[in-house]
Length: 433
Image 1 (cartoon, rainbow, N blue to C red):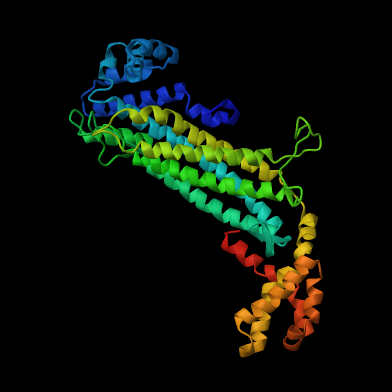
Image 2: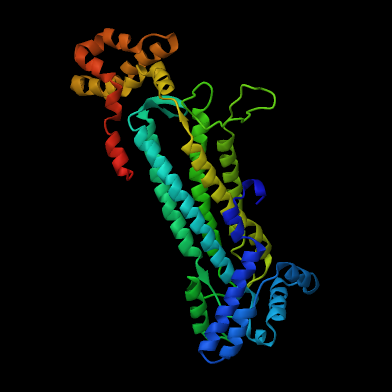
């Protein structure tokens, strides 16, 4: 991922320095396990632990000649350790080191994502509580439907983030598998106890049945879960973009001191952070397609997945990390306009009582009115109010049919917006707030 969308903490995990350090750790742990079985002298293990170090530039120089990153890595380490380095990579294949190290990197990256999501949840929870009873128009198909509150909207987001939290936990679990089982996964030259020792020390689980690699359905599953979290963030960002439209302006992402909205128009305050989140979600979803293509490989493995993963796995985690961070930035500084919400609601508030009036008519008219009949009565009045800019409430109060069945006091109550949000507390409680 380009630096513009990369935060330093997660970038470090995907640096060459960190990757080789984890690979070295895998190699040393394998030697440690062999030493416990008496197959590597303790003195040699001590020298390996003391002298082994990573020099990325030297590895790169060696790789230019040998055209193999693991051999270059082992050669560089051998030069720093000396003769005891002959115990490194004993009975192992490249993917034992690469896949196990990759699992460690992905677990570390996922933990960063989990921390960011926890912070985002707290921000959304605060908004849900703050605006629990702040009335606004609910919208379906982009059109006013019935009243809701901004707090209820945020409670829905909070509930979705709880599901996102579960997805990241599953992602961490599904990817935390390593393998030290040799060339085609048969443990031909290493006892399974070596793998058990290495994985335990690294906080991983041994892959039950590996080939030369950890099966790539794990990685596809992993990215699918990240992509779902990204979809939720895109949904939130898209909502804010709609609410920030000039004709709506019920909420607005923060616009900081000195910020500029347009090179041409000084008045502009554009929802660029939210647009950025929506764009990055598209990118992350595209990584999922590539990950799914990586599942089917030739026999015990081929290398066609490798080049793809070197791009999509770092990019997927870095992208989602940035999206979570940016979404939290937006929501932490979100500007909410309750007065504008009220103004917009008043534009159609009278008409928004249509369903309640219909239900009252059905209830009070009994068998004299079917649901279809009641619907037509209310719809006719609503359409007249909408298309001819008339007062819907006044039309209802003066309608002969409605007056004959529904008392004026009840008609008046049908237009009370508080009726629609009386279960706000219940909804927040159900969301876990």
